[in-house]
Length: 113
Length: 111
Image (cartoon, rainbow over all chains, first blue to last red; front, side, top):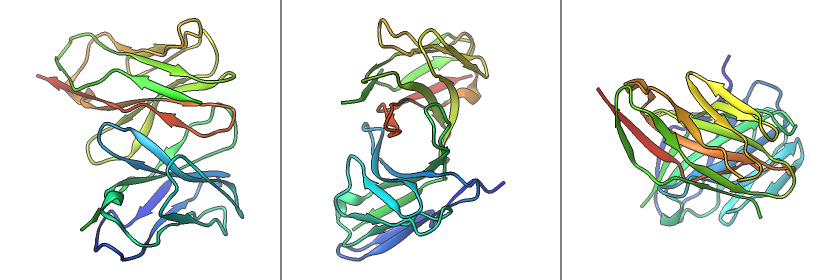
């Protein structure tokens, strides 16, 4: 079982560059989300999706775009990278419901210089 | 809004010591509560969960009880091992399905 697959694992960007972090899941989960992890702040929700064609903003959406054209894929786009976006990014998926477990990818460590 | 407050770390213990990590929450309605664990270089994985008041979640010797009266979900383990060294996150899932995390507690267990 692949579960949630994120690529790349590591990335270094220059300020102003754009890139897309990929996320794919093979569990047919309706709900997918992106988080960033920063020291002392836990995980903060960037964007989420409750199904194909539906996305919404989380706690820290500025500077990021998402789309959900299929159930399996949920890419995160950085439009113009800034040093403040240096972080570890996690994608997660889960079934809809009040007590369902979220499955996480291995993370992408992004450094913006 | 919804929030999770978690005991600050880092925590350093000797093998076979007792571990407790405090977690309290603020939420509307009746959220589900989770503990996730992150081992070095990996993503988060579910450790245990509880979906209603007085439920006890347990896994791998860890336990936590959903206490609605004190809005708490403290994690405990009676005898830790070196392999329990990790970062532990308390999380809540409210009715809008947006999972909220605490800041995380780094636990190091020494042999």
